[in-house]
Length: 113
Length: 112
Image (cartoon, rainbow over all chains, first blue to last red; front, side, top):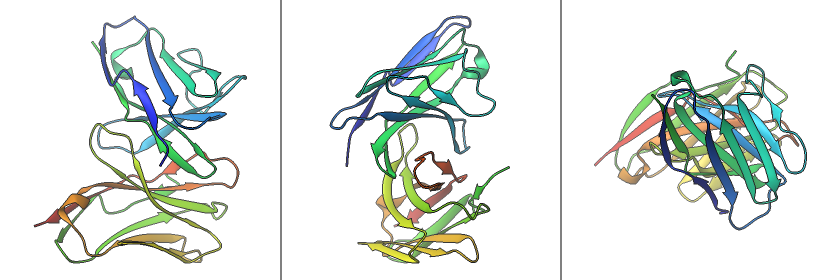
């Protein structure tokens, strides 16, 4: 299947700082990518849809000013957690795909102290 | 409101036997369903999918069954192998959106 990478795989930051997570499609072009977060022992919850060349669309309850998404090219989407707080600590996963089948990145573990 | 549910948080099966993972959904407008396998601290890996116009799809050891009237799908793994031990998520989507609604996951443990 297609390959999606994420960087970094793990990040620890201080409260109040911003953290950028990159999501790349390595062998296909993705006009749309998705960002999810997963809390321990819970399901993956869709946060937002990243659209190449246009604004991201956010799910209900997700603060767009806190979770900035930039989809600057057909192979790269970035998620920036601004002014991170401990409650933002989570596992963030992106996906991109071909039609219905999505390929997921390996995830980024964020810990905010 | 959990639109996709997996009511069994965990399942243990003996190696070589059949594993059956279940998933229920509430929205009849979902028209495509997928199963993903996930290890801790990794992204989900695609296993198998099924369109709402079908009631069965098979790929090797994996078979997915869809019962639209009951709004229920299941994943059968046979024979189960220790390497199948992971968390399994079902996901549902609306045609053309590709936005996944994930179930809550079932942790499968295959005992050697």
